[in-house]
Length: 393
Picture 1 (cartoon, one colour):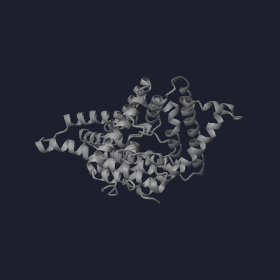
Picture 2 (cartoon, one colour):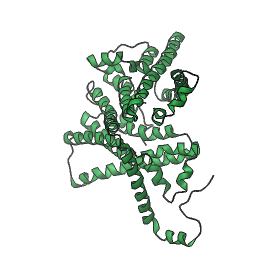
Picture 3 (tube, rainbow, N blue to C red):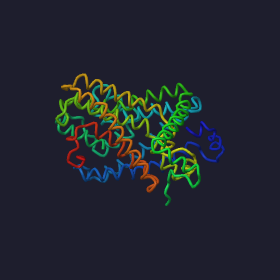
């Protein structure tokens, strides 16, 4: 899609190779690598924490591998068709966001499609997205029927489903260096905030230039983050309590986690791009600018669309506060904003720590995401749902 927008697709069309097969081969190679790193390794780690009932028939495993390969091809076909819309829209960010929303909901990534009730379940199972995740899982499990298990088994299934230099701000010698040092830490913080505001404002003006794409992106981000709470509602359509918590109490946890993480993701979520800058050497261009590097990296490609997560989490939190039974006192009222801001600060610190780790690993964005996006998902449910004391910290 980016090559269509920049015009580089003309070079691809001149090559003596079929354009679709060219990108299919590249995508299958990428998917195969991701299958090992993001599929086999987490699956083996999950096997250490939970009991897995795996088939012993080699034919089942062969059919499963075939279903996985076909799912990769279907996934590429859908994304290839969506990428072609860039010939008309020029900026396909909004369409990509809607594709991510549909794929997450209809593939079984959010919840197994067997959980969806009535006509909704029948509809999502015949859509092509189901072949990307739900169909391979059904093949591996021997196509389990949608029988009504006990609440404890349902809760257990749902819980298991988600599974060499020193950079310094000190300038080299000179009278202007000594004058700058006397300004103190407060002035340096103010300088960084001013630079952050200028860079973020530039990206906001850039993204809002394509108003249709921007509106689709914000709406898609709002709906995509809302799928997590939709999963909670589907759970409580089958059970009355989850880990001893009712719907209003789980919604309260969800709202706190989503708003706190959303604020950190909005303000400093671009830190995950630092590893890419380290690899391609573009970090050097930031180091030579007379602006704090942290402010530049944090504001790089500032995404106003992330307001969708904050808005959605705030709506759920407002609903939870209206129905949950809390004996409000002045201290408890003061604790609410302190909790949200403290949570956002903690998530921001995790973002910065993960970015710093990429100086060592260079390609550790997925490790960082496991602690940021994975952390907020873990906090949205009662700790008792984790099946042990491994997440007690």
